Amino acid sequence: MRRLLINLVLVSAALPVGAADPAPHPGRKLYVAKCGRCHELYDPAKYSREEWAEWLRKMQRKSRLDTNQIAALQDYADAARARTNAPTR
Ligand code: HEC
Image (cartoon, rainbow, N blue to C red; front, side, top):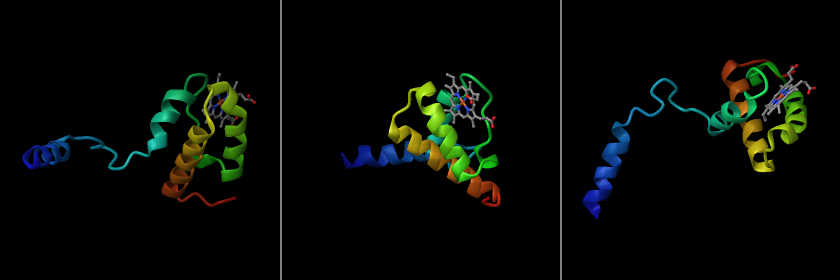
């Protein structure tokens, strides 16, 4: 059992997961899958937190997402904004 555990750790460490992006945000997958269906993937970093929240409210019904998923997308936008260091308006 212990040996199996060690093997698992070694295998997962060897997998090239996220090689290009060391820490893809969990909301990213959701965003790409659910929000690019009807229009381009707008860059969340280009919107203020309030603007994005407003759009998420409007888009929630269109994309049929639950509150937790919307929260993940708000979090993803926060992370994207922090990454680009956009000034908070
Ligand atoms: C069923 C189609 C559909 C889906 C799915 C959808 N949208 Fe939209 N989205 C639209 C339409 C149509 C507009 C045009 C503006 C409006 O509705 O007022 C829009 C506009 C927007 C805008 C405004 C762009 C701008 O600045 O003019 C943003 C931001 C946006 N969507 C984000 C999202 C996000 C985030 C998701 C996923 C949660 C999403 N959309 C899913 C149809 C969709």
